[in-house]
Image (tube, helix red, strand yellow):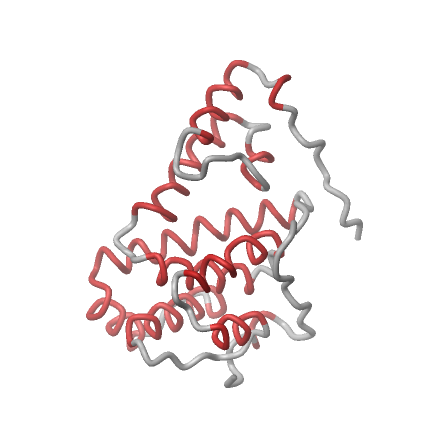
Length: 197
């Protein structure tokens, strides 16, 4: 399968008025730039507008602190083998306080044990939701106690939004960019995060 980008990169000087409006809204927001899957979405500006608004909430405005949302994001990137997302968010997760050994273990699809119970709750819920397509009663109850009901809703929103991001990256062969590379794993997704790090 080809890894060449499947859409030509958008030239900001040739955007339609609708594309320009969305482009400028993204640039003037907390992201400050339009890269990767956001550039793909501009092909459908109405979708781009709505998706980037959800993304702004998921990344910057949810009740989850940055370390917890970035943990969920890198788990999503690993599940989907989304190189662009990993390249961009693994460094953010590290700067938000996720330990280096945890980020490395996640890159290899290994189970992580956190000292912080909230991080463990996010890890368990995000992994189960992605890998098993549901969250166990025990993990859900623990998540509600530690993160609150809104925190659980926002966690599912982060996982869902970054699944859309990852699907866009994989479908359109968005290049990884510079940064840490995500290893290729020789196991089915259903086996991810079962073996201890």
